[in-house]
Image 1: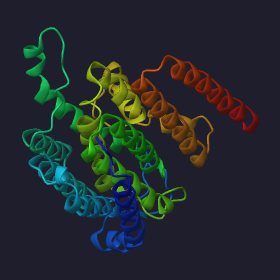
Image 2: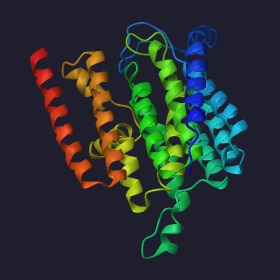
Image 3: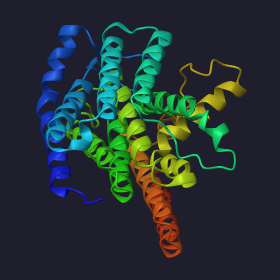
Length: 341
Protein backbone atom coordinates (compact mmCIF):
# COMPACT_ATOMS: atom_id res chain seq x y z
CA UNK A 1 0.00 0.00 0.00
CA UNK A 2 1.26 3.49 -0.94
CA UNK A 3 1.16 5.77 2.07
CA UNK A 4 0.21 9.44 1.91
CA UNK A 5 2.95 10.86 4.11
CA UNK A 6 1.74 14.43 3.69
CA UNK A 7 -1.69 13.40 4.98
CA UNK A 8 -0.19 11.69 8.03
CA UNK A 9 1.87 14.78 8.86
CA UNK A 10 -1.21 16.98 8.38
CA UNK A 11 -3.24 14.73 10.71
CA UNK A 12 -0.49 14.91 13.34
CA UNK A 13 -0.19 18.69 13.01
CA UNK A 14 -3.97 19.21 13.14
CA UNK A 15 -4.45 17.15 16.31
CA UNK A 16 -1.40 18.79 17.90
CA UNK A 17 -2.63 22.29 17.05
CA UNK A 18 -6.17 21.78 18.33
CA UNK A 19 -4.96 20.10 21.52
CA UNK A 20 -2.36 22.71 22.44
CA UNK A 21 -4.82 25.53 21.69
CA UNK A 22 -7.75 24.06 23.65
CA UNK A 23 -5.85 22.80 26.71
CA UNK A 24 -5.68 26.19 28.54
CA UNK A 25 -9.45 26.59 28.26
CA UNK A 26 -10.08 23.21 29.88
CA UNK A 27 -8.85 24.66 33.19
CA UNK A 28 -11.67 27.20 33.21
CA UNK A 29 -14.13 24.51 32.11
CA UNK A 30 -13.01 22.21 34.94
CA UNK A 31 -13.67 24.81 37.64
CA UNK A 32 -17.08 25.66 36.17
CA UNK A 33 -18.11 21.98 36.11
CA UNK A 34 -16.53 21.09 39.44
CA UNK A 35 -14.10 18.66 37.81
CA UNK A 36 -11.25 19.31 40.23
CA UNK A 37 -8.78 16.82 41.72
CA UNK A 38 -8.36 17.54 45.43
CA UNK A 39 -5.44 16.24 47.53
CA UNK A 40 -5.99 12.70 48.78
CA UNK A 41 -4.04 9.91 50.45
CA UNK A 42 -2.99 8.09 47.24
CA UNK A 43 -2.62 11.29 45.23
CA UNK A 44 0.58 13.08 44.28
CA UNK A 45 -0.62 16.67 44.59
CA UNK A 46 -0.84 19.04 47.55
CA UNK A 47 -3.25 21.51 45.95
CA UNK A 48 -6.47 21.24 43.89
CA UNK A 49 -5.86 20.79 40.13
CA UNK A 50 -8.45 20.87 37.29
CA UNK A 51 -8.84 17.36 35.90
CA UNK A 52 -10.87 17.51 32.71
CA UNK A 53 -7.98 18.44 30.42
CA UNK A 54 -8.63 15.27 28.45
CA UNK A 55 -11.31 17.22 26.58
CA UNK A 56 -8.46 18.88 24.62
CA UNK A 57 -7.07 15.45 23.72
CA UNK A 58 -10.47 14.22 22.58
CA UNK A 59 -11.19 17.32 20.50
CA UNK A 60 -7.74 17.28 18.91
CA UNK A 61 -8.14 13.67 17.89
CA UNK A 62 -11.73 13.88 16.64
CA UNK A 63 -11.10 17.02 14.58
CA UNK A 64 -8.00 15.52 12.95
CA UNK A 65 -9.71 12.18 12.25
CA UNK A 66 -12.80 13.94 10.91
CA UNK A 67 -10.76 16.09 8.53
CA UNK A 68 -8.78 13.04 7.38
CA UNK A 69 -12.05 11.23 6.59
CA UNK A 70 -12.77 13.88 3.93
CA UNK A 71 -9.67 12.86 1.98
CA UNK A 72 -9.29 9.13 2.75
CA UNK A 73 -11.98 6.76 1.35
CA UNK A 74 -10.86 4.06 3.80
CA UNK A 75 -12.14 6.23 6.65
CA UNK A 76 -15.62 6.62 5.16
CA UNK A 77 -16.64 3.13 6.18
CA UNK A 78 -18.81 1.34 8.70
CA UNK A 79 -15.67 0.39 10.61
CA UNK A 80 -14.64 4.04 10.98
CA UNK A 81 -18.15 5.08 12.06
CA UNK A 82 -18.16 2.32 14.68
CA UNK A 83 -14.80 3.48 15.99
CA UNK A 84 -15.96 7.11 16.23
CA UNK A 85 -19.20 6.09 17.95
CA UNK A 86 -17.24 4.09 20.50
CA UNK A 87 -14.86 7.02 20.98
CA UNK A 88 -17.77 9.34 21.77
CA UNK A 89 -19.16 6.83 24.30
CA UNK A 90 -15.76 6.53 26.00
CA UNK A 91 -15.23 10.30 26.06
CA UNK A 92 -18.72 10.93 27.47
CA UNK A 93 -18.11 8.28 30.15
CA UNK A 94 -14.83 9.93 31.13
CA UNK A 95 -16.39 13.40 31.30
CA UNK A 96 -19.25 12.12 33.46
CA UNK A 97 -16.79 10.40 35.79
CA UNK A 98 -14.57 13.48 36.10
CA UNK A 99 -17.58 15.59 37.06
CA UNK A 100 -19.75 13.19 39.06
CA UNK A 101 -17.50 10.21 39.96
CA UNK A 102 -19.84 7.57 38.53
CA UNK A 103 -19.81 4.05 39.96
CA UNK A 104 -17.07 1.71 38.64
CA UNK A 105 -19.64 -0.86 37.50
CA UNK A 106 -21.49 1.70 35.39
CA UNK A 107 -18.25 3.00 33.95
CA UNK A 108 -17.23 -0.55 33.00
CA UNK A 109 -20.63 -1.16 31.40
CA UNK A 110 -20.22 1.86 29.11
CA UNK A 111 -16.74 0.67 28.16
CA UNK A 112 -18.12 -2.73 27.20
CA UNK A 113 -20.85 -1.07 25.13
CA UNK A 114 -18.22 1.00 23.30
CA UNK A 115 -16.15 -2.13 22.66
CA UNK A 116 -19.18 -4.01 21.31
CA UNK A 117 -20.00 -1.10 18.98
CA UNK A 118 -16.47 -1.39 17.60
CA UNK A 119 -16.70 -5.17 17.25
CA UNK A 120 -20.03 -5.21 15.43
CA UNK A 121 -18.90 -2.46 13.08
CA UNK A 122 -16.30 -4.86 11.74
CA UNK A 123 -13.21 -4.45 13.94
CA UNK A 124 -12.12 -7.58 15.72
CA UNK A 125 -9.09 -9.75 16.34
CA UNK A 126 -9.20 -12.29 13.53
CA UNK A 127 -5.52 -13.14 13.13
CA UNK A 128 -5.97 -16.63 14.58
CA UNK A 129 -4.55 -19.33 12.30
CA UNK A 130 -3.91 -22.18 14.69
CA UNK A 131 -4.68 -25.82 13.78
CA UNK A 132 -8.27 -25.47 15.03
CA UNK A 133 -9.34 -22.14 13.50
CA UNK A 134 -13.07 -22.61 14.15
CA UNK A 135 -12.45 -22.90 17.89
CA UNK A 136 -10.27 -19.81 18.06
CA UNK A 137 -12.60 -17.86 15.80
CA UNK A 138 -15.33 -18.28 18.41
CA UNK A 139 -13.07 -16.42 20.87
CA UNK A 140 -12.61 -13.47 18.52
CA UNK A 141 -15.40 -11.30 19.95
CA UNK A 142 -14.69 -11.83 23.68
CA UNK A 143 -10.94 -11.45 23.12
CA UNK A 144 -11.48 -8.17 21.24
CA UNK A 145 -13.78 -6.80 23.95
CA UNK A 146 -11.33 -7.82 26.70
CA UNK A 147 -8.43 -6.21 24.80
CA UNK A 148 -10.27 -2.91 24.29
CA UNK A 149 -11.71 -2.68 27.81
CA UNK A 150 -8.50 -3.92 29.40
CA UNK A 151 -6.21 -1.47 27.63
CA UNK A 152 -8.68 1.37 28.16
CA UNK A 153 -8.43 0.83 31.91
CA UNK A 154 -4.70 0.07 31.83
CA UNK A 155 -3.85 3.55 30.57
CA UNK A 156 -6.20 5.00 33.19
CA UNK A 157 -4.34 3.09 35.89
CA UNK A 158 -0.90 4.46 34.95
CA UNK A 159 -2.24 8.03 35.00
CA UNK A 160 -0.79 8.57 38.46
CA UNK A 161 2.01 11.07 37.84
CA UNK A 162 2.04 14.35 35.94
CA UNK A 163 2.72 13.69 32.27
CA UNK A 164 3.04 9.92 32.64
CA UNK A 165 -0.02 8.71 30.72
CA UNK A 166 0.33 11.41 28.04
CA UNK A 167 4.03 10.70 27.49
CA UNK A 168 3.74 6.91 27.52
CA UNK A 169 0.74 7.10 25.17
CA UNK A 170 2.74 9.35 22.83
CA UNK A 171 5.51 6.75 22.69
CA UNK A 172 2.99 3.96 22.18
CA UNK A 173 1.20 5.91 19.45
CA UNK A 174 4.45 6.63 17.59
CA UNK A 175 5.38 2.96 17.83
CA UNK A 176 1.96 1.95 16.49
CA UNK A 177 2.29 4.49 13.68
CA UNK A 178 5.52 2.82 12.53
CA UNK A 179 4.08 -0.70 12.90
CA UNK A 180 0.90 0.23 11.04
CA UNK A 181 2.88 1.80 8.21
CA UNK A 182 4.73 -1.51 7.94
CA UNK A 183 1.47 -3.47 7.75
CA UNK A 184 -0.14 -1.06 5.30
CA UNK A 185 -3.17 -0.08 7.41
CA UNK A 186 -3.90 3.54 6.48
CA UNK A 187 -6.78 3.89 8.92
CA UNK A 188 -4.67 2.73 11.86
CA UNK A 189 -1.85 5.09 10.84
CA UNK A 190 -4.28 8.03 10.85
CA UNK A 191 -5.56 7.04 14.31
CA UNK A 192 -2.13 6.58 15.86
CA UNK A 193 -0.66 9.71 14.23
CA UNK A 194 -3.62 11.79 15.44
CA UNK A 195 -3.23 10.34 18.93
CA UNK A 196 0.49 11.15 19.06
CA UNK A 197 -0.28 14.72 18.01
CA UNK A 198 -2.99 15.43 20.57
CA UNK A 199 -0.93 13.86 23.38
CA UNK A 200 2.08 16.02 22.56
CA UNK A 201 -0.14 19.09 22.35
CA UNK A 202 -1.47 18.39 25.84
CA UNK A 203 1.84 17.39 27.46
CA UNK A 204 3.41 20.88 27.97
CA UNK A 205 0.71 21.83 30.48
CA UNK A 206 0.50 18.34 31.97
CA UNK A 207 4.17 17.65 32.68
CA UNK A 208 5.30 18.19 36.26
CA UNK A 209 4.31 20.54 37.77
CA UNK A 210 1.00 20.06 35.98
CA UNK A 211 -1.40 22.93 35.34
CA UNK A 212 -4.18 20.55 34.36
CA UNK A 213 -4.81 16.79 34.53
CA UNK A 214 -6.33 14.74 31.73
CA UNK A 215 -8.69 12.93 34.12
CA UNK A 216 -10.64 9.86 33.08
CA UNK A 217 -11.77 11.80 30.00
CA UNK A 218 -8.27 11.67 28.59
CA UNK A 219 -6.93 8.45 30.09
CA UNK A 220 -9.86 6.26 29.03
CA UNK A 221 -9.85 7.82 25.57
CA UNK A 222 -6.12 7.22 25.10
CA UNK A 223 -6.44 3.58 26.09
CA UNK A 224 -9.43 3.10 23.79
CA UNK A 225 -7.69 4.57 20.73
CA UNK A 226 -4.47 2.63 21.38
CA UNK A 227 -6.45 -0.59 21.73
CA UNK A 228 -8.50 -0.19 18.55
CA UNK A 229 -5.52 1.09 16.53
CA UNK A 230 -3.49 -1.97 17.53
CA UNK A 231 -6.32 -4.30 16.47
CA UNK A 232 -6.73 -2.64 13.06
CA UNK A 233 -3.03 -2.24 12.35
CA UNK A 234 -0.97 -4.71 14.39
CA UNK A 235 -3.19 -7.73 14.91
CA UNK A 236 -4.07 -7.75 11.20
CA UNK A 237 -0.46 -7.72 10.06
CA UNK A 238 1.76 -10.04 12.08
CA UNK A 239 -0.27 -13.26 12.48
CA UNK A 240 0.75 -15.19 15.59
CA UNK A 241 3.48 -12.63 16.43
CA UNK A 242 0.86 -9.91 16.74
CA UNK A 243 0.15 -10.51 20.43
CA UNK A 244 3.85 -10.29 21.25
CA UNK A 245 4.34 -7.17 19.12
CA UNK A 246 1.26 -5.42 20.53
CA UNK A 247 2.19 -6.24 24.13
CA UNK A 248 5.72 -4.86 23.71
CA UNK A 249 4.43 -1.76 21.93
CA UNK A 250 2.15 -1.00 24.90
CA UNK A 251 4.09 -2.85 27.58
CA UNK A 252 4.00 -0.41 30.51
CA UNK A 253 0.22 -0.06 30.93
CA UNK A 254 -0.41 -3.72 30.11
CA UNK A 255 2.09 -5.30 32.49
CA UNK A 256 1.60 -2.79 35.29
CA UNK A 257 -2.11 -3.61 35.23
CA UNK A 258 -1.57 -7.37 35.09
CA UNK A 259 0.90 -7.28 37.99
CA UNK A 260 -1.49 -5.09 39.98
CA UNK A 261 -4.31 -7.60 39.49
CA UNK A 262 -2.02 -10.49 40.46
CA UNK A 263 -0.72 -8.60 43.50
CA UNK A 264 -4.25 -7.91 44.74
CA UNK A 265 -5.38 -11.48 44.08
CA UNK A 266 -2.49 -12.91 46.11
CA UNK A 267 -3.22 -10.44 48.91
CA UNK A 268 -6.93 -11.40 48.84
CA UNK A 269 -7.97 -7.85 48.00
CA UNK A 270 -10.45 -6.70 45.34
CA UNK A 271 -8.72 -7.07 41.94
CA UNK A 272 -10.14 -3.78 40.69
CA UNK A 273 -9.43 -1.93 43.92
CA UNK A 274 -6.95 0.92 44.23
CA UNK A 275 -3.59 0.71 45.97
CA UNK A 276 -0.15 2.30 46.02
CA UNK A 277 1.72 -0.62 44.53
CA UNK A 278 1.98 0.53 40.92
CA UNK A 279 5.40 0.95 39.36
CA UNK A 280 5.26 4.76 39.42
CA UNK A 281 4.32 4.69 43.12
CA UNK A 282 7.17 2.31 43.88
CA UNK A 283 9.68 4.57 42.13
CA UNK A 284 8.51 7.57 44.16
CA UNK A 285 8.61 5.56 47.39
CA UNK A 286 12.17 4.45 46.57
CA UNK A 287 13.48 7.98 46.39
CA UNK A 288 13.00 9.04 42.78
CA UNK A 289 11.67 12.53 42.25
CA UNK A 290 8.42 13.03 40.35
CA UNK A 291 10.25 14.01 37.15
CA UNK A 292 12.89 11.28 37.49
CA UNK A 293 10.22 8.59 37.84
CA UNK A 294 8.30 9.84 34.80
CA UNK A 295 11.42 10.15 32.63
CA UNK A 296 12.57 6.67 33.64
CA UNK A 297 9.20 5.23 32.66
CA UNK A 298 9.44 7.11 29.35
CA UNK A 299 12.76 5.37 28.74
CA UNK A 300 11.33 1.96 29.59
CA UNK A 301 8.37 2.58 27.28
CA UNK A 302 10.66 3.66 24.47
CA UNK A 303 12.81 0.56 24.94
CA UNK A 304 9.84 -1.82 24.75
CA UNK A 305 8.49 0.11 21.74
CA UNK A 306 11.79 -0.38 19.90
CA UNK A 307 11.72 -4.06 20.80
CA UNK A 308 8.23 -4.33 19.30
CA UNK A 309 9.39 -2.76 16.05
CA UNK A 310 12.46 -5.01 15.90
CA UNK A 311 10.34 -8.12 16.44
CA UNK A 312 8.04 -6.98 13.64
CA UNK A 313 11.02 -6.52 11.30
CA UNK A 314 12.10 -10.12 12.07
CA UNK A 315 15.79 -9.46 11.39
CA UNK A 316 18.25 -11.38 13.60
CA UNK A 317 20.94 -8.71 13.26
CA UNK A 318 18.51 -6.00 14.32
CA UNK A 319 17.49 -8.07 17.34
CA UNK A 320 21.13 -8.50 18.45
CA UNK A 321 21.93 -4.80 18.00
CA UNK A 322 18.77 -3.81 19.86
CA UNK A 323 19.61 -6.17 22.73
CA UNK A 324 23.05 -4.53 23.07
CA UNK A 325 21.54 -1.01 22.98
CA UNK A 326 18.93 -1.97 25.59
CA UNK A 327 21.64 -3.35 27.88
CA UNK A 328 23.67 -0.14 27.50
CA UNK A 329 20.62 2.04 28.17
CA UNK A 330 19.65 0.13 31.31
CA UNK A 331 23.24 0.29 32.55
CA UNK A 332 23.28 4.06 32.04
CA UNK A 333 20.01 4.44 33.93
CA UNK A 334 21.40 2.33 36.80
CA UNK A 335 24.64 4.32 36.96
CA UNK A 336 22.73 7.62 36.81
CA UNK A 337 20.56 6.52 39.71
CA UNK A 338 23.60 5.50 41.79
CA UNK A 339 25.37 8.82 41.17
CA UNK A 340 22.32 10.92 42.07
CA UNK A 341 21.15 8.89 45.10
